[in-house]
Amino acid sequence: MSYITSDKVTSPRRHFTLIAVLDDGKTKDNSTGAKNVSIAVGRWKAGGTEKPVLAMRWNGDEENPIGNPQSRGLPTWFLVPQHMSHVILDRISLSEGKRQLLMDVASEFFAGPDGTGWICDKCGKPIRTAKDGVVEWVEFDGSKSHWKGRRMFVVHHLTASPLKKKRGDEGCYISQDEQDRAHTQTDSTPLDEFLGSDGLTQMLALISDAKVPAKDVLETIQRLHTPGFERARLYIPSALTEGLIEPNLAPGFYWQEELKCVLENYPEQDLAVAQGRNEERG
Ligand SMILES: [Zn+2]
Image (tube, rainbow, N blue to C red; front, top):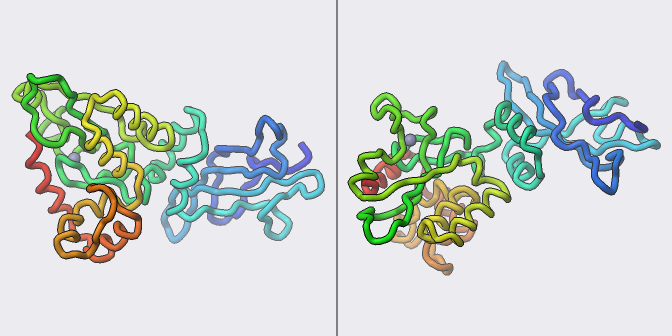
């Protein structure tokens, strides 16, 4: 190899430890990866704490084996700010193995489009990373079902459910009893499978299948893919009443500017509002 490959780049050493190179810049058109971008995941240690970080750099070539950035003649990584990491991860395609590795060492990266996670529809408590969440839905099954209200929910995975003690294996899921009473059944998918480009495509396919009302899937897509939507949606009714925003899109859809305005005007107090939403569920 005519340049220092990214798996050999370990600086800035004082704070950074390389865990794995996710993309070494090699492509069909550029089999050496020279002058392409490499992306890696590492650990950043500072002030007694340690957290996963995404790192990037330009590979070198024969003339400039060190690539960029460099410091005192040593190749080094540029650390991607935390709030931008998910944007990159959403768009690069990773092998299943690399994706799994990332989930294991850096589950913080999978915390939604703005990095703040989600709010469980059942218990109202935060779901901090995608691996702690599940998307659950009540299937359409003709006229027999008495299910009322919304049919798609974002809830805790059993392993992360605060209701595990109280409700056992049912955790934050819709219980068997609730399903029996409404003559219906549920289906679910781990939340992380609905993230990224393939996740979005899968959700669009759900609309096409018409297994869940489109309105509910469209709301969930926004909760999983639109920055600010998950938290702002709790305050939107008040924001509308107070005339804080005057949306000009179809009901249920908001510009980024509007979501930002809602979040700035309603201090994050809690999830009490979310708790109130559970009533509509069985
Ligand atoms: Zn929950």
